[in-house]
Image (cartoon, rainbow, N blue to C red):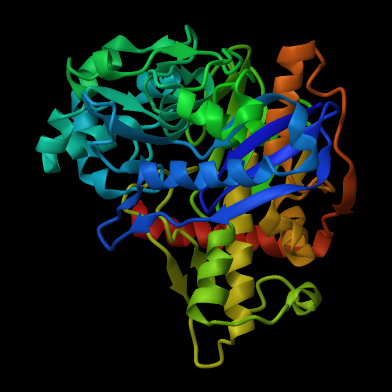
Amino acid sequence: MSLLVIDLGSSSARTLLFDDEARLLPGAVVSRTHDFASDSYGASTAKAEGLCALVESCIDEILQHPSADDIRALGMACFVGNWLGIDAHRQACTPLITYADTRSHEQIPQLLEKLAGDAGDYHQATGCRLHTAYLPAQYNWLCHHQPAAAARIQRISDIGGYCYARWFGRDMPTSLSVASWTGLLESETCQWHAEYARQLCGAGLLPRLPSLADYDDAQIGLTDAYARRWKTLRDVPFFLAVGDGAAANVGSGAVDARYIALTIGTTAALRAVKNAQRVPDGLWRYLVSADMPLVGGATSEGGNVYQWLWRDLLRETADLDAQLIARPPAVHGLVVLPLLAGERAPGWQTDASGTIHGLRRSTSRLDLLQAHLEAVALRLSLIYQQLESPEATVLAGGGALNASKAWAQMLADAFDCPILLLAESEVTARGVALMMRRSLDGVALDAELPQISRIAQPIPARVETMRAARERQSELYRRLYG
């Protein structure tokens, strides 16, 4: 029997088949790329119907795989946070608004004023900062700038719930995992925080929020149209979508405080499953499930920085990893803030943008590439410091990181600790498969640890150079943003 996983990320939709041991089956990956719609005002949106159709086409194709005749369950991971408005006819009445949408930065001071100038209690209660990445600021922006669209909203949904509602013909709950990325879930009680919803968004929002359930609240009963389209899924349980970061931790083997998961894909994040008495100022607390709090920080920069610089701006195709490895760190003389899509952890500046300081006529393309990759590593090292887990083992994965030995070495030098590179290339989807397996059979999430492909060890001389580079980067940040 097999397990079907939907992995809806920031740049692709994929379907994958795993066996009962959560091992990826040969030739069992179908992928479609997509892009968020963005503009110079900070928009980052998608059309929910288009994304759902993309996922459906991936399901159509994966069901042609020989192992798809006996699918036991389906699970989903999706990029978070995301939300859209659903009207009285169960149709999308707003675009899907994503974590990368920064148009609501002007709403932050107004929301802070509603909290009497102190968002500390809000941060501790919800695990989230007042920031453009979350629902309160984005919902306020929509009400202010697009009141007609906001007035049509009967229900709020995430993209996973939207897809399931289409497939099952009924309203769907949102998993606690996805809800914890909204900025309105009370972490302690696993309920919507009614007071903050009212205080920050008005009395009308709470009734529009979806019902809540843990990820293993499996749904069965496709509509007739989808049951005919996907005959093998007619009676298969569909587990609720979980946050992609939560699934990546599970797939990496980082399911307790002994481990920290580092993933670099389109964006990047460091996370640990741990109970924290207090959420550090620069970090967040989300949920994998009701019994698994996740503490960490995510950046809006990662592989997208490489994509923008090397592929889009300079239009290079050369593989320069060997040259990067041979170069001393910070030899380029540049100081970079790689905040091309704004900033989340650790500073949460709503108006932050990318900065390159120190350009000269002698600056080369290789200098620019090295400086930007190092800059991402330095920013992630700030999150690593705030996690305050020096004894924890760092397990690293993600397509962008696996492609570059040089980047892994930069991270080891910036963190001053070994970075264990995972041989498993599908950590997010694997995490979903493991979570389904736990629910179906009671198998522990760490019963099958992933293989390690290699270890990047910090080099003392480089560690000192990177430490000095981090201070220069932090000083530039302070000068720009205080």
